[in-house]
Amino acid sequence: MTAGAFEQATLASMEQMEVESLRLRMDDDRILDITVGKTAIMILQEHCHKHVGKPPSYSECHAAGSTKGTPVFQVTVSLYDGVIAKATDLIKKRAKHKAALTCLRELYPHVELWGDLVESTNSRQREEKAKRELKTVQGTVRLRQQMLLTSKEAGQEHLAASASAQDMNADADAEGPTRRLSDYDSLIVRDNKIQRIMLQVTKDKLWERIADANSCAAEVICM
Image 1 (cartoon, rainbow, N blue to C red):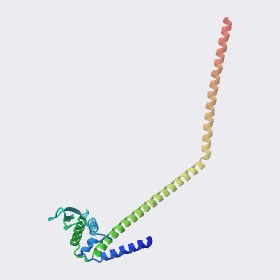
Image 2: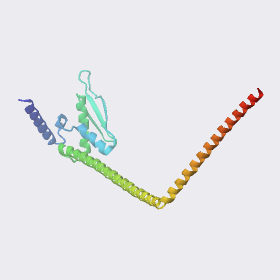
Image 3: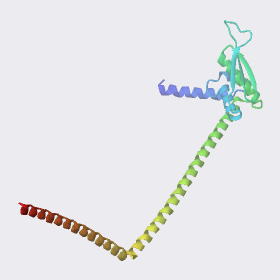
Image 4: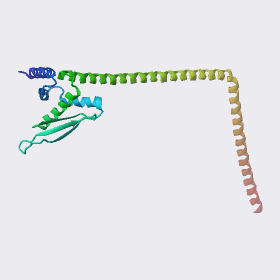
């Protein structure tokens, strides 16, 4: 048998085991031997998550009559609403599964088949998943609406800015000759100022030269 064929045969066998386990009655202890699909501990956990708001609490101890060679484990499970169930077994893990199953039998006395209880929890999970997906979709829609609104407002602001710019350009065209004349006048004033400064500097230099020349002449006369 090839690896692929062995894998298919294994999957088919597991599916068959799960189908058979779902057909068991709630009072059938063979539910404790389920190795494929949900166990009693898992179903009780989901029940508490949905209806109680906190996980079940398990406590373990040695039952009366235990000996050092053959200990008997007693597991007690309690819920927030006060439901308590106890179970004993030579194997601690099996005692825990027994306690969970006993608790489920008390919580769902009207359910006849194990498969019906499993399907009810699956339905609740699908319902919760659908609610989460709906919230995600609603959040996405709100985000897109906000983005569209923001984009629309930005577009309106852009149009308003464009209109304002056009009005300013029109005013500038209407006042163009006046503005150009004003700029020309400012250039003339600036050039005249520069010329006056240069003229003053030139005068100062000339007076310095005249002063130097007079000083030299006076020295020659004194000699």
